[in-house]
Image (tube, rainbow over all chains, first blue to last red; front, top):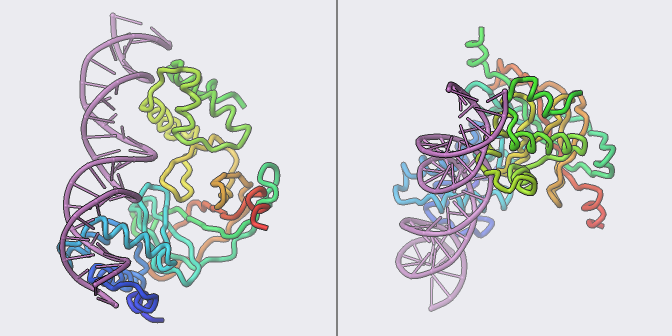
Length: 142
Length: 142
DNA sequence: GTCCATGCAAAGAGTTTGCACGCCT
DNA sequence: AGGCGTGCAAACTCTTTGCATGGAC
């Protein structure tokens, strides 16, 4: 699989230093199954490119989502997280203790049987958020 | 089942006109499986109580969620919706066309098998969001 | 009479947008 | 050389908060 930066170049994206840095961040985070927030991206990008602006980060993230290269993930709070793992179907575990998010392979979810007002609804995708305690937080419960 | 207003009185809540109106809205919306936003609540409450303030609506909604009388539901955008249907486990269908939200009875979701970094995660709840097209929007697709 | 919910207004977080400049191609 | 991405700053949306008043009990 080519890197995100390579894929964007292939797509004909204008590869500015800013975009290169942001893409590189997601190439790293993909292998670690990390889910960065816009602020995380800005913070890490500033470390390399001190003059990068918040607007550029948001613009680029939005474009990457539109291009299908990132998944925008919401887990209940009002913060959007960006998931570079778009090529393997997976769901998310959210720790109610520390807020950490983990990936799990998607198991087949039983299709709902919409009746009543929902009759005729055509399901195209199912997204599952498992809530619970990660190993560390579960340990502290005892 | 007593009405929400009755339950709040039983709990010893100070029943102001504002709280009475908001509770009444959810008694109605519960029977219709509607998922009101804070703005919906404000708008409908203003129609009855012109001087009710946005802050009171938000405060009351927050208190109702804390009391376990409402569920705060997020379906991906940054708007919180309030679901009075707290006593029957259910998931949500979200129409990607018109944004409508429908309830479906919760079917058993297979437990994930967290491995890797997620090892030891203790799952306590699973929340499913089905995305697709409601009957009306599916009809327009043809 | 006491306390707490209310209204007001301002603050706050996260995100988006308009515009002129400068860099990538 | 031309167009698009950038930085800046302001605007925007949703939500929360501090404080004085007044209504519920």
